[in-house]
Image (cartoon, rainbow, N blue to C red; front, side, top):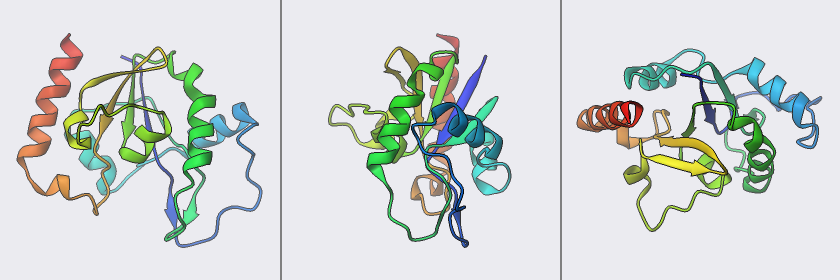
Length: 160
């Protein structure tokens, strides 16, 4: 199964790189983000892999920013719209966190974000599912029952 994992952005203690391609240069931006990857190591990757997830490609919607820089929802929506055709080439797209879900324009239908975790979603003809953001600030991970429930839900969705 070919899967892609999409996150928000990398937070760094340094400044954003000065030579960064504009979103309109979609192909170059896509390739650069793929090369950069996301959750390469550390707690975030371990949490997602503990759910049994495997992904070929992982990338962030926005370029790295220093910690504390506000989320740019407008640019995130532009990037999501530009990437949508590429996502149809994957069997499943994992959207990591509520900001990414919002960038792709997913209607939550009045549900809490945690109620969408692991459920199949259609985003412009691409099969997707929402995952909890694996950062240490996300309290969802504190309850050990939550990952087990999500793991079961993901297994059921994969077998369907």
